[in-house]
Length: 157
Image (tube, rainbow, N blue to C red):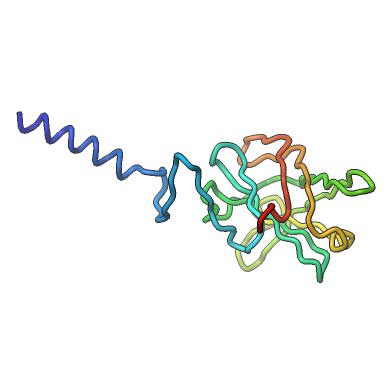
């Protein structure tokens, strides 16, 4: 009888330890959803069901829109072989397509074709401020994500 109860306790303990599926510490209510913090202070866009994130950050002083590919918890950078991806920004004059290009980073060893960072020069975006956009398609580690919505900055921020 003792072994039966020990096995049951072990199963319950294993399920509790498995938690969110990662080796990290954070508090959230899965029923209500949870939010992760963007490492650069930008806007996170979830890809898939907790698979990956894209973080977007616009610097009005430089006119540069940057994006980073991150894991599902926005804790680690995920390198990508994408040659580029598009962001279609809605403006008063109609949609404008911005091409996000890969960025090499000698400090991290990332190269074009093996990087987590992408950027585009969009000085006209400074006059717009907040914007809505769509990413028609982006591929991360062989998984294609289509028609991904982006609101920058999100309402209420």
